[in-house]
Image (tube, rainbow, N blue to C red; front, side, top):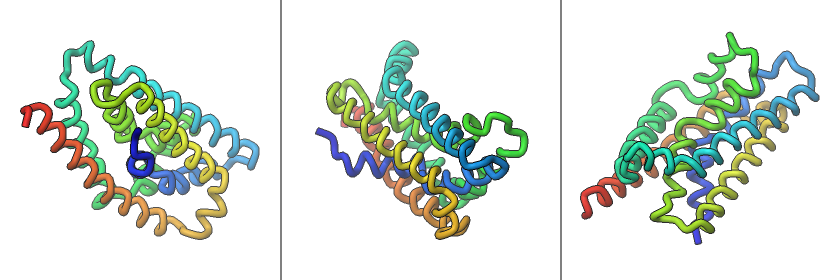
Length: 202
């Protein structure tokens, strides 16, 4: 049995649903309400498809490339840590991804589905939380369900984006994004240390 709360918080941190709100508002500014709902649905479904693919095939790909999972866990922890550092000290998610809008035609796919929702950190997390040697099939199913619940939160926030943005503003979204970055940095460090422990048999 997985710890639903910790897995939920981890995916919430790497996906950062709150940070997606200003991105969604910016990319859909010229669309009517019906089009906005359609874009939100498409973006969520595409992101779900990508992340579930990594749940199912991520470890298979690593095995085919003869990459030991602890090595991937160490690398994933380092990458997640760097991703978290960029969330804390660099441009926040809303500021960074709104800049990607200028030359975008398929707004539901880019930058919404990728990289705003299905971020590199979320892809890595999907693989790390579904290791065959560490988690049973049922536990992997539980992780997938938890991931999909987080994506439902993302969808709900996008559908209520205008109302939420009026309450928190860009500054509020930026603060929340940085707090999520701090949580993610802690989890990333723990993952890297666990990978080192497994790799060297400590």
